[in-house]
Structure formats: C-alpha cells, structure tokens
Amino acid sequence: MAIVRDIMPAFELFQPATTDDAVGLLAKYGRDAWVMGGGLDTFDWLKDRIKRPSVVVDLSQVNDLTGIRPMGGGLEIGALTTLTEIVRNPVVKEKFGLLHQAAELVASPQIRNQGTIGGNVSQDARCWYYRGGWKCYRAGGNICFADTPSAINREHAILDADRCVAVNPSDTAPALIALEAQMVIRNRKGERVVEAEDYFIGPATDITRMTILKPGDLLTAIRIPDKWAGATFYFEKVRDRQVWDFPLVNVASAAVYSGGNIERIRIAVNGVAAHPVRLKAVEDAVRGKPRNAATADMAGQLAIQGAEPLRYNGYKVPLLRNLVKRSIRGVEEATWAS
Amino acid sequence: MGIVEWATSPWGEDVPIHISFFLLWVSAIAGLLFLIGHAIWVKAFAKPEKFAASGPPYRDVHIPAKVPRHSLAARLFHWVMAAAMLALLITAFLPKVGVQFPWVTYHWIAGIVLTASILFHIIHASFYMDFWSIWPDKIDIEDAGRRWRRATGKDSPAPRRFAKYPLENKMYHGVIVLAGLSVMLTGIFMMFRVRTVLFPRNPYLFGDMTWGLMYVLHGLAGVGLIALIMVHIYFAVRPEKLVITKSMIFGTLDREHYLEHHDPSRWAADGSSGRAKAAS
Ligand SMILES: Cc1cc2nc3c(=O)[nH]c(=O)nc-3n(C[C@H](O)[C@H](O)[C@H](O)COP(=O)(O)OP(=O)(O)OC[C@H]3O[C@@H](n4cnc5c(N)ncnc54)[C@H](O)[C@@H]3O)c2cc1C
Ligand code: HEM
Figure 1 (tube, chains in turn blue, purple):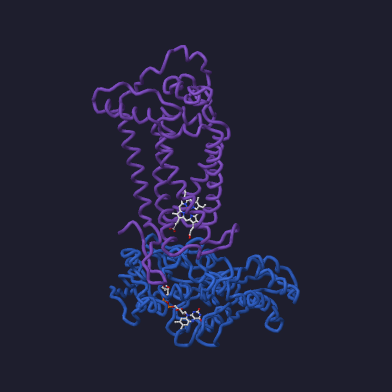
Figure 2 (cartoon, helix red, strand yellow):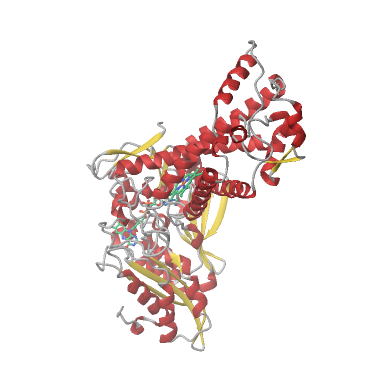
C-alpha cells in the first residue's frame, strides 16, 4: 500500500488557551476532532495519512493543563505535563518513585521532553499492520492481520486477546494503576473521575479504542492519592534496545511489607494485552504471605494463567512470569529458565 | 454513504468488509413506520373480516373446546429461538449504538443456541409436523386476490377461512427462514474468524472477497431481523392477536376462534391437516 509520508493532509488547527475553550471545541467538532498533546503519536498517524481528522485541537497553549500540584497527601498532574517534568519533580521521585522510574524509562530524552503524560496513557497501539494502514479490526475492518498463521507477531498480546492482538505500549500506565491513580476527564457535560484501571479498555469491549475516551472527552489531569506514598516500588521494563524502545513487557508494583510479610500490594503489567493488566488474582494470593522465593514463584505462575501465545511471542510467557516474580522479590531472585 | 463498507485487501483488491451500520436505524425506523401505519389502518380504515362459509355446520360438532395448535416441542422451540434471537440482536447492536460490553462471546453462544434450535425445528417440522402447513398454497393465493379486490371496492367472492396459518404468517415465516438461515450459515463460518472453544480459528478458510460478502450478508440479514422482530412482537401483543400469542404459550386455541377464522377442511381440529384428512 503506497503511503505518502511527511506531507500531512490539510486540517483545521485550533490552539485554545484554556481548558474550557478546548472542551468547547471538542464538543463542537465531535468525532471530526483530534486532541493533540505532544504530538509524538499524532504526527505519525497524520504524516502516514492513515488518520485524517478534519480538525486538530492542539493543547500546547493550555497552561492550566500543565504542572504538578499537591492534592490531599498526593498529587495532581496536569495532562499536558511532559514526561521530563515528571521525571524531574522531586515529590514524584521521593513519594511516588514508581512513576518516576516508569517515566524515566520511556523512549529517549527528546521524546520525554515533548511527550505528555496525557498522551502517554492515551497513545494508540503500535501493531504495524494497524499502523501500516491495513483495515484490520482495530481500524474498523473484519480481520486481525497479526493473528494469522504467517503473521509477524513477536510484540503482540498473550492475554485477553479478542479478535485484535495488539498491545498497549505505555510505560506509565501500569505504574499509575499500581498507584491507584485517578483520571480526570472533562467534556461538555462536566467532569468525571475514573480509576486508572478503568480508563483502559480491551478489544472485547471496544475494538477500535484503547481508552474510555469518546469524541468530545478531554483528559485534564491525573490524580495520585497518598495511599502508596513512600511504599516499596518495583518497575522493570524489558525491551529490545536499552534506549528509545517500547516495552516488550513491563511490570509495576507498589507494596507495603510488615515483618517480612506482604501487607498490601498492587501489581500491573503492560505489553501483554491491549490494555494494561492489573494482576488482581496475584495480589489477592500473595497478600499476607512472606516475601520469599516461594511466594514470588507462586505469583509468577499465577500471572501467566490463561496466557495464549501466538506464533512468535511465546517468550512473553516466561518473561511475564519472571517479571512478576521479580516485582515481589527483587531482581536477584529471578531465574530465567522457562 | 454506501450501504456497504469497503477496504483494500493485502493483494490490492477492493473487498467489502461490512454493511454500514446506519442501516440498523433504517431497519428500526422502517419497522416503526410499519407498526404506526398498520395501527392507523386497523383503527381507521380496516373493514371487519368476512369469510365464505366453510362447510356444513354439522362438521363443527366434534370440535373440542380447546383446539390443539402447537405441541410442547414446537412451543419450546419457539421460545428458545426467541430468547436466542433477542440475545443476538442485543449483543450485535447495543455496542453499535454506544452501549459497550464484551459482546462477541455472548453473541456466538446465543448463535449456537439459535442454530441448534433451528436444526431441531427443521427435523421436527419435516418429520413430525405437517411440513406444508406453513407454506402458501393455491387457496391462499386465490384468497389473497379476493381480499385485494374486495379491499379496493371490486366485486369478488368472500375469501375462505384459513388453514392452520393465515397467508401473512406464512409469508412472515418465509422471510424469517431466509434471514434466519442467512445469519446462521454465515455466523457459523464467522466463528472461524474469532477465538471460540469449539474449533480452531482459521481466517484463511475463504478468500477476502468471500469473507467480505459473508460479513455483508450476515449484517444485512441481521439488520433486517430488527424490523422483522419488531413487527412480530407488535402483532403478538395486538389485542385481536393475543389469542394466537396465548396459543404459543398454552398450546391451544379456543373453539370459537378456531371456527371463526379457520376452515376445518383445511386444518382439522385434531391437529392434522385438511389435506391429510381429504386424502385419507
Ligand atoms: C520512537 C518512539 C519511541 C517511544 N517509546 C516509548 C516507550 O518506550 N514507552 C512509552 O510509554 N512510550 C513510548 N513512546 C510513546 C511516546 O511516549 C508517546 O508517543 C507519547 O507519550 C505520546 O505523548 P504525546 O503527548 O506526544 O501524545 P500525542 O501524540 O499528542 O497524543 C497521543 C494520543 O493521545 C491523545 N491525547 C493526548 N492528550 C490527550 C488529552 N489530554 N486528552 C485526551 N486525549 C489526549 C491524542 O488524541 C492521541 O490519540 C514512543 C514514541 C516514539 C515516537
Ligand atoms: C439475530 C441474529 C443475528 C444478528 C442480528 C447478528 C448480527 C451480527 C452483527 C451485526 C455482527 C457484526 C458483523 C460485522 O462486524 O460486520 C455480527 C458478528 C458476528 N456474528 Fe452475528 N448475528 C446474528 C446471528 C449469529 C449467529 C446465529 C451466529 C453463529 C452461529 C453469529 C456469529 C457471529 C460472529 C462469530 C460474529 C463476529 C465476527 C467478527 O467480529 O469477526 N451471529 N453478528
């Protein structure tokens, strides 16, 4: 398929100065409008001429969407805050080191300078059949090109696939789920706050979207409560190259230990399904158990229950298992034998 | 805006992929307009039905107070199929109008129930019921002509009483057979496109064009069923048809209704067909 790169199709560009104006524009143009944060995902789609919105609402001038503010004992992070700002923020680093680590491992410094947290959690799947413009399920068609016997699907899903086998590639998303973050969404009708876990949706529910955002919706902020402030955090990302690369699988956990036992814990992984997966069954199984190799082993085994690898991504099963093990016991405890 | 959506296949071929789903509104609105039109017509214009005499009155002496119409097996089939059909419509179209839930698994499970009930019905109707009672016969066609001429003010003898089913029921059944078999056959093949526990996925079972046409047929028959089911439910709850609806629950028709609308020589009160009687 011939793709014209680097020459974007014409669209009307709006650069509102306030959140109210941005919401008003999104309400006015509905599904014809495209929200743009840092533009890193956006420009790929536009330059490849695969998505052709007639209106682009560039948020870069909306100052009230940026910045990190204290809220309760936690924080509120404006959706337009860049990943670099998050990495550099001392409170994030001190109290919510999990998000600090996750954001620091995103792509490259240049991308973190430009990429926003709102864009990072709302970014689209990186499946190349979909990105290549093929009319697959996710693009509104009736087939998944990545789930055919000869498809190249090394980066694809091992969990929760439903017709589409693309994965969610965000590094910050599982960290936010582990921290029990909340997403603040505004549209013409008002504001609603949803748990980070419920912000993401899988193909069974809606095969063409990665998040619950609908036309007219704007993610304005992400709130991190103080529930896990200062807890023990673990973030690990495995990727092909150590810079500039999306996760093959990542894991984020927040835990509170007492007397060598796991008092409470939240674990989420990404890169294994079309949405970041909170490992609720694992959390329930390890709560109250000693933080030892046996518990970590059990957690790893539980995490891969129901995994269905495709032709080329079988490696993700032991990878997921070992990352979950490590998230409980730390790097030194992991064995890489499958 | 076309009624079919197209895409380019990896071989550069233009292939259909779906119907355009605005058609579901077209079908729902068409169904609604029919209901409104029919209700107005019945209220304002329809004349009371008049039938030609159906034979000497002594024939009626043996008619029981409750005339058997649907066997238990036939009623069970009807209600299982109705539940499956509603589940299929809900799972297929609610997500298309914005009510999102993981629909595909529920959809194909309901599809299997529908398929099983249809297969049962085909065998049951072919070997244990009067197969021909639901298909229009010569008298139905003649009587339809008579009704039409009388409705348009022309001179014509009164139509005869019905056999087991009036012509409208027979025609409705015919359309439902077409739509039902279309969704069923295409749906079974479409299950090879998704992951089910029943058989391994095989998206290469057909070429892109065949698959596309299959999705289009599934969609067209599916949206058609919206209007068809609306019309069916409307008739089921119309006051003058409630007696027929009740027969689908209790299995029998009252003697009076039977004598008023049905011709014992075309549908005998013991459940056998008039044809069978005449032949024996
Ligand atoms: C080469 C490369 C490598 C990368 N590697 C990684 C990686 O390792 N890990 C990782 O996590 N990410 C990675 N990314 C993704 C990158 O971090 C994201 O593209 C970036 O975070 C998106 O942010 P953005 O602000 O540029 O989003 P945009 O492109 O502006 O937006 C992305 C999507 O989010 C929507 N959106 C943005 N802001 C809002 C809002 N406020 N409300 C509603 N919708 C909104 C847009 O409509 C669009 O659909 C990589 C990207 C590139 C190009
Ligand atoms: C009232 C009957 C039915 C209606 C209204 C209906 C409607 C639909 C619609 C609108 C779709 C979406 C098609 C598309 O994306 O183009 C669909 C998909 C599907 N249907 Fe049905 N259907 C019915 C019966 C059945 C039956 C009987 C089966 C199986 C035996 C079935 C199996 C499927 C499957 C597997 C899909 C998913 C295909 C995919 O997403 O690739 N359906 N149906």
